[in-house]
Image (cartoon, rainbow over all chains, first blue to last red; front, side, top):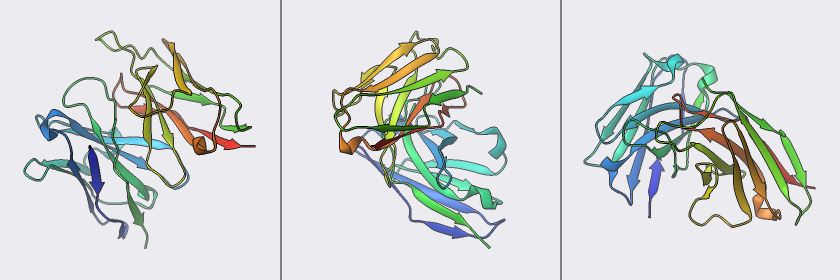
Amino acid sequence: QVQLVQSAAEVKRPGASVKVSCKTSGYTFSNYGISWIRQAPGQGLEWVAWISAYNGNTYSAQRLQGRITMTIDTSTRTAYMELRRLTFDETGIYYCARDIPAGGASFMDYWGQGTLLTVSS
Amino acid sequence: DVVLTQSPLSLPVTLGQPASISCISSQSLEYSDGNTYLNWFQQRPGQSPRLLIYRISNRDSGVPVRFSGSGSGTVFTLKISRVEAEDVGVYYCMQGAHWPVTFGGGTKVEIK
């Protein structure tokens, strides 16, 4: 069955960087992409970024461009999201979700369990 | 960016009674392939979101038949025919037709 397993919770200082992983199984990794979604405490869902495991193309929310990097490791079927120069309001749960492999419409059919990021001084 | 407006924000429902959630989009969600990419997700307390309905009205695998989606163009609805205790949570609509992907603000379903 399709599974996405994310890395453990992180606590970071403002200005630091964090790298979250999303290890997949149960499907052909290169046939899909991975989206990243953030949920601030007690708030709704916000799409953050996408990477294709098919061709490595990436796309991120405009406000994060320059501070976010998405990568994939096809040998371990794992996607990564690195966020730099963290601010307090980036605290929240970060989810990965299986998504489109290339240009097209998003669907996000399977989700990871989430990684809690706390930015605190 | 496409704005999705959900209503109501909170929906208290009696067990066994129907529930309906509205999602209105700021623009058409029809993609160039002719499909309309409006999905519904359920997020139970303490859990990850789960895909319930894709492309307006298609139930994902394992989703109970009491959940149904409808609509077209810019107006969409999620209905629960008879609410059960396990349906408590927050429901989100999401559009995938235009990047960046956007979500509605969520509707909290609770039992009266």
